[in-house]
Length: 295
Length: 301
View 1 (cartoon, each protein chain N blue to C red):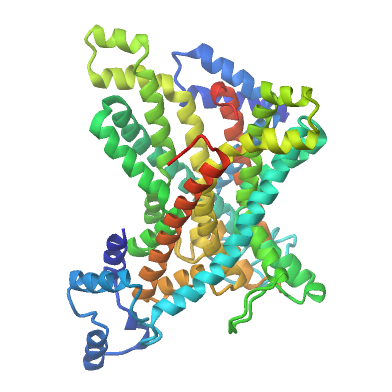
View 2: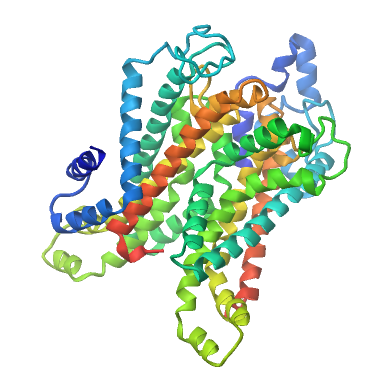
């Protein structure tokens, strides 16, 4: 996969230095210095053999800055945002789904379901922009624009306040999805015999809901966790660009717009790795939720 | 008025897109759809939106790319119902043209996805064996990659244009329909009537398109309805990030991203395209839900 991306990016018209008005001999010198005058296959071999050792080479736009530390730092920023969004997704989604299912066909159910459909339909960049508008412009005196990352990032991580608005914007779509699925599977489960048996035994309602029903209702939710994580990763590209969060997504767009091939390929490789790890983690989560599955 | 007008539009919808031979099934479905008020309202909204998009082809209040027809950053007023943007272009005209872009991206992508999905899914489901193995693996690989990022790269590599955006979107969202068609084919091919057709010497093509496909059509239509909003959303995302259809084409995503630049000064530039986009996506999702309940009762969630 990295090969296709590499080829594609390198076949782009123009080159990195097109914006810098370098001509003739100095251009040839620059191209040579970064090895860009070699055949593409040689360049790819060079890239992949270093990448395996965790070295993504150097940035072309910010002359010679090694990429690996940058990407790792940005990964930690993105992971923080994505983790917060994932927690929100599971926490809010499951809670709302369970509440809606327990209060089926009441106004609680209807309002939560409607809320979920809205959250599912309104694009995350709209929610994010509205977040900026409400909390950053209209309520500026209250928040002081607190969730904006400073232009020059000083290496400290976002506080809870700084994280909340971006994480909500990022996690609303996925939590709506989780709420919908949880509600449906919860409704399936609570009408089954073993739940009635548990109630008949006189088990407390809270215990029935959490231990008997919810545990089984969560199995369908786990099966969509993989796609959910991918959609959070995808969404983070947009959210980071809106809130100016210095993570992988912002770098991805920047590197594409500035033709910084090496960085684009490095960031994409990181994303591919992330997706792989996430899928593995979801597979492991299955065994925790559903002990019938063994590997 | 609206109550009278709506069923007629459904009927037109039925006669133009659905297969007639199974009138009872479709009539049954339409009856169920008509009882679903949210889906009906959505359908009416979408028809209105389509009308606006068609009108925008021939007429907009002001030329969509004409600079300085209004005071720059001016809010909604009598002459410019939705105000103007940072170059003094009339926002209503641009939103109307944007509706046309969004709808054509959505419908075109859905058509392409339908084509790919039907061919790929039928092939995998009918011939099974190693063909199915290869196709299923490819589908799973596509599921594993972040679609938006790949679409983003594809548009960058292919060049920013309407066609390439549609290609990139179709190439990254086709799997749902393909997998559905495959599953349907796998189960339908074992039915007695398919066996009977095969026994009477029908060719594979005849069985696939004459017997299997028409019977799988309900779920397929539902799945394709859900492709339209996701394609529209994708296009808006790409335009919003500045890698979609290039300016000055007025897409909703691009207008919204211009609005974010001027958030403090004139939030209406962000608000109006966002509202339009959200309503459209909402309508497609409601309609899709309604269609699923109406035509695909087994798949109730």
